[in-house]
Amino acid sequence: MGAVNTYRLRLRRKRWLVRARRKQHQLRNLADRTRTIRRRDILLFSTVRNELIRLPYFLQYYRDLGVSHFFFVDNDSDDGSGDYLAGQQDCSVWTTRGSYKRARFGMDWLTALQMRHAHGHWTLVVDPDEFLIYPFCDTRPLPALTDWLDASSIKSFSAMLLDMYPKGRIDAQPYRAGQNPMEIASWFDAGNYTIRRNPTYGNLWIQGGPRTRVFFADTPEKAPALNKIPLVKWDRSYAYVSSTHMLLPRGLNQVYDEWGGEKASGVLLHAKFLDTFTAKAEEELTRRQHYAASKEYTAYAAHLKDNPDLWCKWSEKYINWRQLEILGLMSKGNWA
Image 1 (cartoon, rainbow, N blue to C red):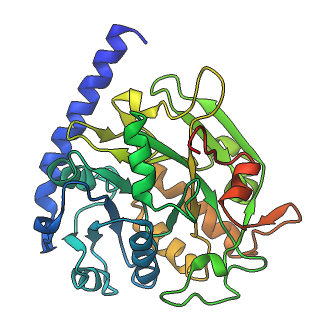
Image 2: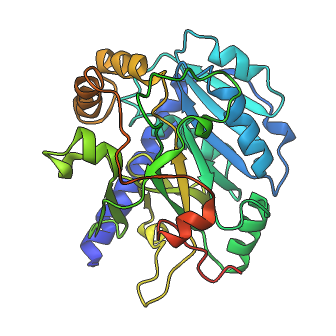
């Protein structure tokens, strides 16, 4: 990459950091427990809106995995999400009525908090419907993974977003608070994925799965990206570019091996498609706060209205991380 482009990316990163500092004034603190954070704690950052039904299991899942402290930005929920999170002893919570879209889809708010609180920590940035799976996660907690990454001088860890869905109509079985969503949404597409390299940022761009197959069959190039880099050894000078799809400095996007072999990687089980989704899609379509004028939610609303069924004869039922490794959707690399 040329010196001019490198300089442009550096300026872009600095501009986003300045944006984050400005946007932090939109945040009002509900609960600040950051004084309890220890030097080696793993931190999780998330933006939420009306996710109360999902939060009990989400918190328990990541607590069991090894997350020590949670940072939430509640974007004007009216279902009690903010108050619920403020009552959790391992959560620090901020609220805002600011525009999600104008805050770079929430990333400005989270970047402001990361700059202040996450420097030197391993940090996870995930949505309330995303659940990290990594090699040996059934026997090794998250600190074991981050210790190995530290010992290997690796600063970022990738995870492909894997859309999970039920067999049959997504509104057939009601989801209850505290339930593992994969008890309902236990199926996924084992293939049907395309991968290309982003020449500007150096990351891999992945598309496909049920959202391409069902919602963007005629325009697959417009389907949502599935590449994520959710786990990073954070530095206050870092910034996400677009959601957690890629970062700056661009070296953090080198999460694959260019010289043969494979680097360790994980999967984010994406439990978006539950019975709560249709109402959520309609709400977000009205708010118009998502990327590209909410075209993604326009496609959801149009298709789910007639046939809310994503299962097909090629769908595979989820078993464990080893199954995903065999299918080539994640890798343990040289972590043994």
